[in-house]
Structure formats: structure tokens, C-alpha cells
Length: 210
Length: 210
DNA sequence: GACCCAATTCATCAAGCGTTGACGTGGATC
DNA sequence: GATCCACGTCAACGCTTGATGAATTGGGTC
Image (cartoon, rainbow over the protein chains, first blue to last red):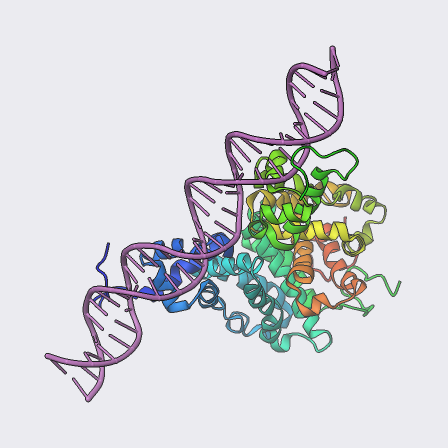
């Protein structure tokens, strides 16, 4: 039980500790099941202090849920080898996810929270739509650019969901390179292949205008 | 305010009303944010009656969350036209979802609840893995069957997530046939195309494998 | 029609929740 | 070194939650 008032300087920054604890708990438990008291306990801080810094639980969420991945940097340089951009996307995302546990936790939290809370849902929606779109830059042809980016988003989102959130055995146990080999061409297809009405070649024939 | 004891016969079955109300609310709100009182109010019933029938909230969830889609029936007959099985899968799932609002709500609920509650997560995991696997039957070649089915699951799951849960604009506003045209070939690729070690070109492959 | 059990409500519980206001404490400023 | 304010804790409020046990009513059974 620490003394009453302001702490002497030198110790760890309580604000940062709160943010870390909140990010961890939101990731593991989602929004509703994360309690202010639990965050406070993990941060070794009184619960009221959280309100002092972040006003309320939503504010804490907004602060703890900084966009955990710089999509622009993650997907930079893909246009140097447009033919293998699809594989590169999958490889980078998986590598990023599995490399840095901090990012992994934050991204996992974003997914989990985004499905139960509207604020985070917006962040996630933007990440899977707009952010990917701008990040892909010139790789994506002009026609249906938004749709192409969003399709990539659904496939990558579904992959992360199946592998890390739900844990579907076959996807959970596959090696990253196995997934790159299987999904890379799909992403490539979404990026540069014929989607929509185009009857052209490239893939198992898109059933002409039936 | 109804009288105290047992109701006279003739009215609607309260047990069914509870299940309906629970399914609706779980779908809209997820597990945590659905309260027993809200279920009771919508079912026009005292909250204690829910405990009488279903013991506790988890029991209510388990009872209300019957598998909302007979994947076997939904995906039956695909092997009659294996070349277009991919498109058929996407078309049927979207048609099913958009056709019957009851199914739609239940499936949406399953997704939403499955991401916040372990019991429902298991149901969802099985649906996207095992159930799809068995449903696809002979369409899927022998090699990597489980992985193929799971990959289909991730793509379809990601699609539903983006279109109906998150509402990514480009995917939300696309027409079903647009999505069939864009995603059908991908599912086809997962079903019968080369995944894993196969040396052949990615997705840009002449039709007629397997 | 006496008896039993299922169905149904009522009243209430204990626990946990987010939040608040008062109060103490130290660093910074002049 | 007096003053001010950000920092930090304490104690508690008001509310909601899931759950329980007793009380009441009706249908079935013999």
C-alpha cells in the first residue's frame, strides 16, 4: 500500500503502465470483460487514476488502441516486384505477426475488440479497407481499386481470424510458408487479376456473363 | 403483470419465446452485453423462468445457438460440376445469407458471439473447419483436404466479416454476383488448385486440375 | 377431489461494475 | 518558502448483473 500522494520521481511512468496493462487485457478479454479494476491492478495503480488520465473506459480504449501496425511501412516497396506482391503481402503480414509479440498482441486485441465495440470496429474497418488501399499504392490497377484492397482485407482478416483467434486446426498448424504458397496467389489475384466482369484469362474461367 | 402461477394453456410456448428472444439479442449484442433481463423482457417472461429452463446464461447460449445452417445441405451437389464449385459455394452462401433473415441473424450472431465466448468459438471453429470439410465431400482432392477446407473457411469467414459485421464499404456495397465473380475463382483455387508444394504456377493456371 | 409436480412470478441477494469527490503529497515556479 | 497544480489514493455511491428460494397456480393422475 503506497503512500497517499504524488509519487517521487524515478519510478516507471504510471501512465505508460496503464496503457500497457489495458492493451494486454483488451487483447485477451475484449472490451466488456476487461474491467477498470483489473487494469488498475495489473498496472499497480489505483483505479481512479485511470479516470484521471483517460476520463472513462472508452477513452482508455481509444488511447490503448493505437493503430498497431504501420500498414504503409509494412507494405512498402511491393510495386518493385508486382508479380510477387501477393506472396509478399502474406509473408510480411505473417512475419510481422509472428515476429514481434507486442504487435501480435495489439493486432489480436484490435480484432477481438473490434468485433465487440463500435469504436474499435471503425479502426479495424479502416485498416482492412482504406489503409490497405493507400498502402498498396500503385500495385493495384485503377479499376475497382477499393474493391481489390477490400478483398485483400477480407482474405487477410479471415486468415488471421482462423489462425490466431479461432484456431482452426489446419490453419493454425500450417507453417507460414505453406500459407504463403497457398494464399499468396489469391492475394495476387485480388491485386492484379481479373475481378468483376472481365472475361479474360488468368484463372479458372470466370463463367462468362452467365 | 400476469398472475402468479402457471399459465392457462393456449398461449404461445414461453420456452420458445425465450429461445427466440435470446437468439435475437445474442445476435445483435454478443454474449456479454446481452442481459438475462433483456431476454426476459423481450420474451415477456420473468427472468427467473429462464433459469428454470436453462439453468444459467451459458445454458441459454448453448440452447439458443443451434447450428444455424446445415452446411451439408447448403453445399450438397457441388461435385456434379466441380469446375464451378467455387463460384457455387460463394453464390449459395451469399444467397442463403441474404435470402432468409432468420438464418442471417443467427449466423451473424454466431460470428459475433463466437468471437467473444469460448463455447460459441468452438461451434464456429467447427463450422469453418470440420463442417465445411465434410460438406465439401468428394469435391476436394485428397491432398491437404483439411487445409483446403479451412482455407475456404477463412475466405468465406473473412468475407462475411467484412461485408456484414464490419461493413467495409467496398465489400458491403458490392453486388452478390460481383463477389461471386471475384471470390468464386479463389474458392475454386482452394478447392482444386495447387496449394502447398506444387511446382505449378500460382493461381494463374489453366482449369481442370484434379 | 386429493395430491403431486411443473410452470411461473416475486422479492431479494451478493457481487461486481464504472465512476466520483474528497483528500493528501510532492515538484515546480516565483 | 509560499503557492499552485498535476499526481495519486481512499472510500464510497448508485447501478446492474446473474442467480436463488419461497410462494402461488394450474394441469394430470388415481
